[in-house]
Length: 183
Image (cartoon, rainbow, N blue to C red; front, side, top):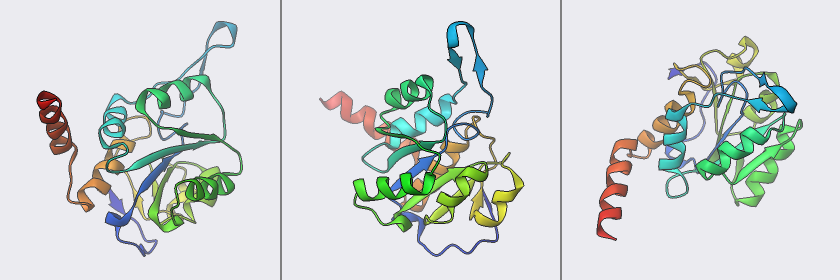
C-alpha cells in the first residue's frame, strides 16, 4: 500500500471494523446484466478468503453500497458479512453501523473508489482508496492499495490492518486448521 499525504491520526492496530464499498472495491466496477433482469459481478476469491479468515475474531466487516444487488447480498452472506447497507447517504449509514457496533468512527476503516465514498472516508480513522480509484479521492485517503478493485484490494487492506495488530492471514489460517483438528 502506498502512503498518501492525508495525515493519519490513529494507530491502525486500534481499528475494529473495515467497511467496503462494493462496485469498484469488492468488484472490478463492471456490472453485467443477463436475461430476465439477472445480474453478475466478479468478486475476488482472494478478498473473500481474507474476509472469511479475519472475520469476527480479529475484525468486523461491513458493506455500504449505493446500489442494491442480490448478488452482493449473496456474496456477503457467504463471507459472513452481516452488515450490508444500501444507501446513497453513506455518512448516515456509516454512523448507524458505528452505533450498532458501539464503535467510534476513528475505530473504523473505509475502502472506497469514487466520489460517493468521500463523505464516509472523511469521517473514519483509516481511509483507503483502491489503485484504480477516481483521482478526486486521493487527497482524502490515507493510503492507496497497489491492487485494483475486485483484484485483491480488500485483502491487501485486511493484511495491512492485521500486520499492524501483529497478525497475518497465514498464521490465522494455520491456527484455524489446528483448532479444527483438535475438535
